Amino acid sequence: MTALPTRSLEAWRYTDLRPLDAMSFAEAPAASVPGDLPDIGVPRLVFVNGRFDAAASSALMFAHGFATVTEESDLPLALINAQHAQDGLTLEIPAGVDAGVVLLVSYANGGALHPRHRVSLGAGATLTLLEVIKGEGVYWHNPVTDIVLAQGARLAHYRLQNESREAFHLATIRVGAAADAAYESFTAVMGAKLSRAEFHVELSGAKAYTHLNAAQLLGDSQHGDFTSVVRHRAPDCSSRQTVKSVLSDAARGVFQGRIEVDRMAQKTDGYQMSQALLLSPTAEMDIKPELQIFADDVKCSHGATIGALDEEQVFYLRSRGIPEDTARAMLICAFLTEALEPVTHAGAHALFEAAIETWWTGK
Amino acid sequence: MLEIKNLSARIGDKEILRGVNLSVPDGEIHAIMGPNGAGKSTLSYVLSGREGYEVTGGEAIYNGQDILALTPEARAAAGIFLAFQYPVELPGVGNANFLRTALNAVRRARGEAELDAVAFLKLARTALKNLSMQDDMLKRNVNVGFSGGEKKRNEVLQMALLRPGLAILDETDSGLDIDALKIVAEGVNALRSPVFSALVITHYQRLLDYIVPDRVHVLAAGKIVRSGGPELALELEARGYAGLEAA
Image 1 (cartoon, each protein chain N blue to C red):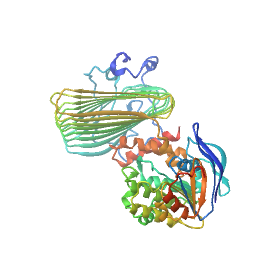
Image 2: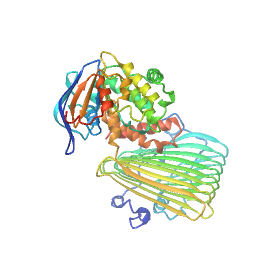
Image 3: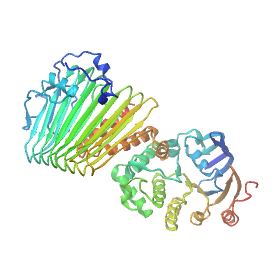
Image 4: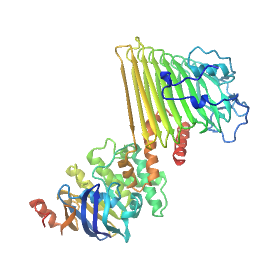
């Protein structure tokens, strides 16, 4: 097996995989579907311990069988995934088709899972893919999702990472967007003992667009890493990233965001903002923005803030009769609001709001 | 009825209030005037329970209960309302959601039924209309991008909805033009009743032309140094605060 990356690699400086390396995981066992799977009244595809569960899933004409994986990158986790991948979602939306909303549920409760998901949208096709990722106990979930968007296609991709608090979650999501295509995504990072979501988005056709947002809500000694690489390869593309982190106890959050602008990618409009709220003195946030610009007519900016809840705002709410806990929860939700902007589907939005509220209530 | 007895408070090592004595009977409006740094805002914060102010002596009894030990939200439920000198902006918090959450929290604490969205909107629209405010005020984030006058009107809107027994208006007139001042004053006057009292804190006499007080008190160097009828405000306007500390 390819070795796990170490902190000596620049891309892994803030996330230490030694706790994962110290464990040995067998292949994930077969398991039955838990009773409380989410259902928002849309077609649902269910993976249990990395395997497709047809009985718990809806029949979907755009879903196809799994094909063998060849990995061309040198990303260590994608290589490990390729060596073990045995199943995964394959969704192909034909040109011009609006495929509505699809719910992808991943549930795990043991072993190592390396699913390889593939989503492709033909020219002008649209899809909203909502992923709910959850589990129980100790396991290692190492999914790779490859997304191909043809000209003018639009994918809204929402992920609720709510893994077991004892689990490891290392996800790689790669997106290629042709001219006029749009990739709008939001990830909520709430679960796992140690997690990383690594996005590679290539805007390879003119006027391609991506919105790459995240909210990390972490407590105890959880570690959450949101890493993104957005490559502007063609003129007139734009990218927007808003990453909000709320960290309590001794939680640690990481945001590494790199924007690369090729020589030919003139009129690039790139924006990146990372904001963190530290709810305790022992919480920690590491932010590393990077801009690599080789074109001369571009607009790229990044910003970062780290702070605590504004006690003046807390007092204002309390002085109106709102209990302290509710006041703090309202302000945390308000802090996260901007990151949730890409989530335009009402059912998905409600799901995230409920998850955020549950997170806060459990504090 | 609010009774403040020998109230002393400090911020850090700095004594701000040095034995304030004051009583405001139900149904009355009292003005507190005084020079900058006299402790006017401190008094309003100590009464509403803001952190960072240490009460070093005395008590504040409202309707028979010493409020100084209560949380700010419990004081609000008991009927105390502070209209802020500088209303706080809450980006990401919608005004309607804020108002309804506050109103229902207070209603719950008072043993009243909570209002659903429809009943709340009806109530809020009426209150908005009375204050010459646009309905879109409800859709905006709390105080974000509001003009000075809009912020103060939003304070009075909250007051109208929460129906306090005791309102503390901290320099509500600062930054207001005369039209906004009249609207704010009408909002306060509309609440006048035998079960409503108010402490109007102001630096200038101007506001008191529109909210006519029953009593005027002068706070200087952390103490009430003079009390009188509405004519005292006019006298201060003419002569200034100079020499009052010695009084």
